[in-house]
Length: 110
Length: 114
Image 1 (cartoon, rainbow over the protein chains, first blue to last red):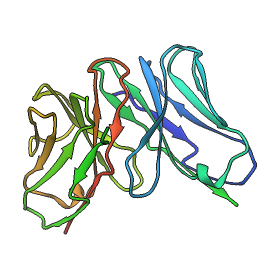
Image 2: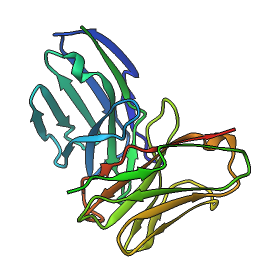
Image 3: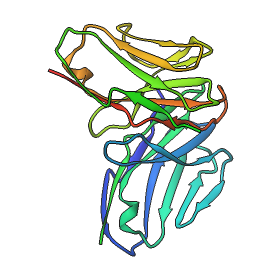
Image 4: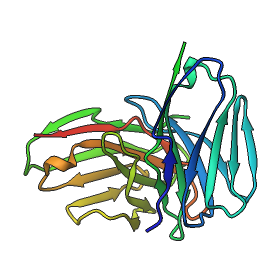
């Protein structure tokens, strides 16, 4: 069974600080996606990474796919209260189905 | 272009009953996937429909079943409801099967089983 482990589970930091959250697996994924989910809503896709070592930037968010395509990280620079939410990583497995991690719940304090 | 919609938004059922949840996919999309998200967990894949056929299934019992219609909308049916079926049920639509395709999620249906 392919699993995605996300860490930390919870993170609470002050506005303006930087942070990194992680998504790790012992399995290789053909692609990996990051989503943000707010209470009462469905996940919203932030980025898809496909190539090992790939780095993508979305404003203050930087996403990296590990060289071996087993792990990924999300770095947020100068966090803002609007970044608060549940960050989910999801990988596409051998059967082309998407497997989600349990998420990192991020809270940015104003 | 309309997004993914789901109905109802909230539902309360009694153990043993049956429930049907509905999803309208985003225009231009031909694939619908259903997920169950328990409180504090990530979404778990239930099944996917493509061209009105089931195209893969997660680790869920047969009492979870689905349909996809010619207009690509979809239903999730759950029979013999159990307390553990209480969760947020998410529908996601996409265009291409078998690629790192982008999925767009609906707001979900919150099911409570008492």
